[in-house]
Image (cartoon, rainbow, N blue to C red; front, top):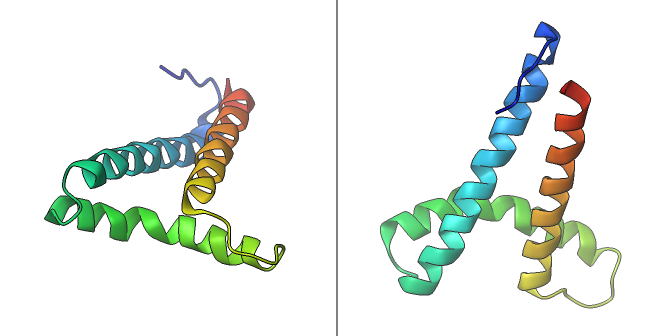
Length: 93
C-alpha cells in the first residue's frame, strides 16, 4: 500500500496505477496467448497492450540495422515500466 502525505502527488499515483494495470494486462495476455491465441479476451488484450511494444520496436529499428526479436522488445518494455514505477513511487513516498 502506498501512503502519500502530499495531496499534489495524486497525479503521480494515477500514473503508477495505470502502469500496474498495463503490467497486469500484458502478463495476462502473454499467459492466455500460450493457452489459446485465438480467444476473444487474448485478442482484446492484445489490442490494448501491443501498441506500446510495437512503438518501441519502431523506435529501436531506427537505431539498429536489423529487427530486434519480439521477446526482447517485451523484456525492455517490462523492465522500463518497472523502473519508471519504482522511480515514481520513490518520489511520493
